Image 1 (cartoon, each protein chain N blue to C red):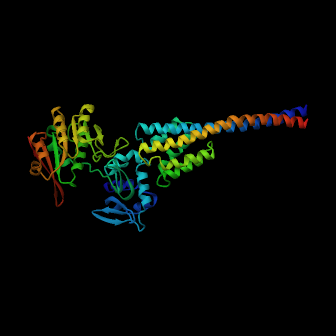
Image 2: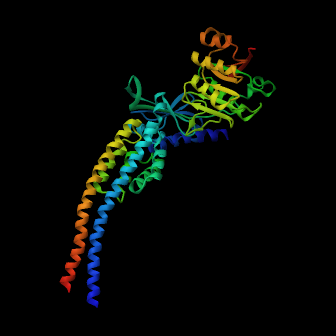
Image 3: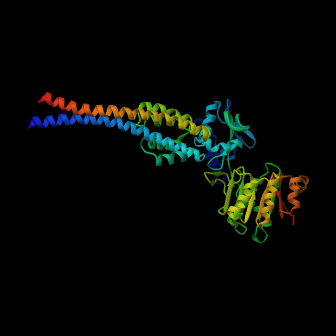
Length: 169
Length: 303
């Protein structure tokens, strides 16, 4: 009985690890997609007029999800301390703190702080669109990875668990 | 009390400065803070405070170009795109109605100033409202408590805009006259100093402000949209402005405006302004003159 319970725990644990790893890949895709959607929102708002950055970021933070909402809200808050930290540093720092976004995604996003608020709306929109395009490409690659590797991880988790159970029994 | 308010206005204006320069500005004794009119920053030179016509150095370290850029970032809340139209006219208004003027190397696009880069100088003008400036003339401009069509004249720097602002405030609040709905075409944002849609200088509770729009277009829009009883504009300078005022006068609105002139004779010598007189658009003329003790107001009835 104890053997059976142990075997079930080992099998379950291995399967959980495999599914967890596959979920991480999915979350990575979702974070990239949410960030790209957030940037698309900024682009649209900049197309409608010339909203000051605090209003633009506060509005976008309310209407975005995931890392985009976190980034926009953090930057909007930091705008009240511009005498201590300029906006490009603030954006870089907030980007580096984003928990959900991959390192590559952060590298793409970080330079946008040099563009936002500094140029006219058309130039800013072009800058945001370029970054959004790169993030969408990254998200497409991540989606493909998630589809292929996720299946592998899940299979590895299940088969690895079964193998260990056979070995232990 | 007034000194304290003036020093507080100085400290509020200094909030637009980067940290190091702000510390230097705030190290100025309160007495001098209350008298400072401007903070001047020039790349490569220490920052100075303009006090009664003299520039007083506020530190020893020179202002860096990066600090001028930081000043613009703080003043615009990192939103240069939102203040570009203001920058093109030479300055931007910050909280409190203070004005940040900038200059540097102009970047042109299609023949117009698109941006300034790099910046070379900046000037923060401390906004201070003179409440009660209209008291010496209010009685004569409002016989029976009703404001009559009034044109304010003076050479630059004698307080035309200050008198206009205070008249608008008094009429809008009903101070010393019957309260009226005032619509103000504030093309350069000097009268009400809108910031985030809110006038930073008091223009009264019944005043609607149209900023950044050419005066003539602004006057006509206000006339159609806001149903004013008094229509006000600062510095009549173009034939279109006169046309717009004439049209408004035909609608039964009281006019309140200013013009650059030393007096009635000077006004009559200039074609544009002669038309104002010939058309009989104004009933009262207020001329501001410099005197030894300050300034004197002369009210003349035209009709």
